[in-house]
Length: 87
Image (cartoon, rainbow, N blue to C red; front, top):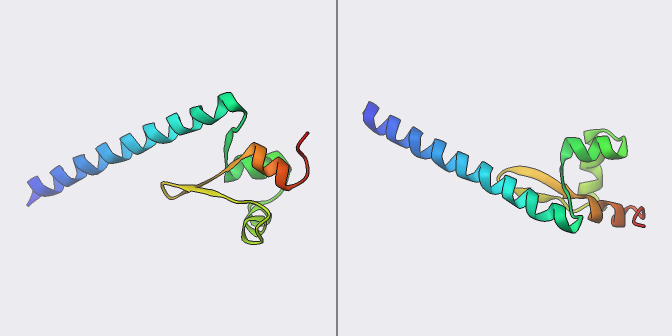
């Protein structure tokens, strides 16, 4: 039985590692075009608001979050456009 637990743990670790690599590559793909991906914390800090306010903005449709791998991201350009801050 321990063999199977170890086997599944190794598979799970491998998948987690590959997902993390994919997330990093995805984030890098957005940077050259100016579509920098930001986490919830980074987005809240960028606008000087709490995570609760950020959540309210998402629920009310002001912001459209990107849900990827159980994590939430926002693009800087979309946020600025939605809030009327785009230049």
